[in-house]
Length: 153
Image 1 (cartoon, rainbow, N blue to C red):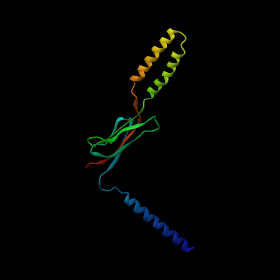
Image 2 (tube, rainbow, N blue to C red):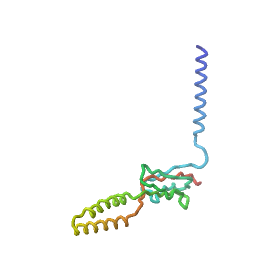
Image 3 (cartoon, rainbow, N blue to C red):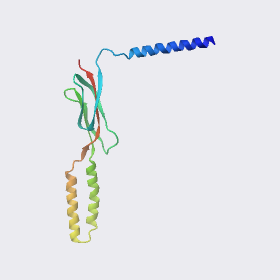
Image 4 (cartoon, helix red, strand yellow):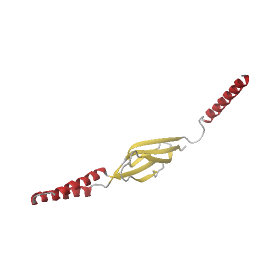
């Protein structure tokens, strides 16, 4: 019984000593301070800026969900080194809707019963095609840009 109590006491002291060593190692240390900043929005040259007196050391982004044909075109530090800039896009969902509507307009041309209704349907189809042609093919996606910043002093 006495050996068990002694073993338990020794184990407790060892755990407390380890905890003290871990706590001491977690104390603030001299050297550069690091901060992470983030900003949410459209990833269309979205920039996460470091606080005054800090320089960017790395960065990145998060784009939740899945968009058709996502493309990351930029993920880099700003030219002055004080932030991280991100650009990302996907297929324009409005363009996809417009293209989808073209099939219905083509069906109206194919199913027209008179020359006048066929001509009207054809003009409607051509107008819709022009709208689709003029629409941007890609659109910025929403997400978060991150910058890891280190105290420059």
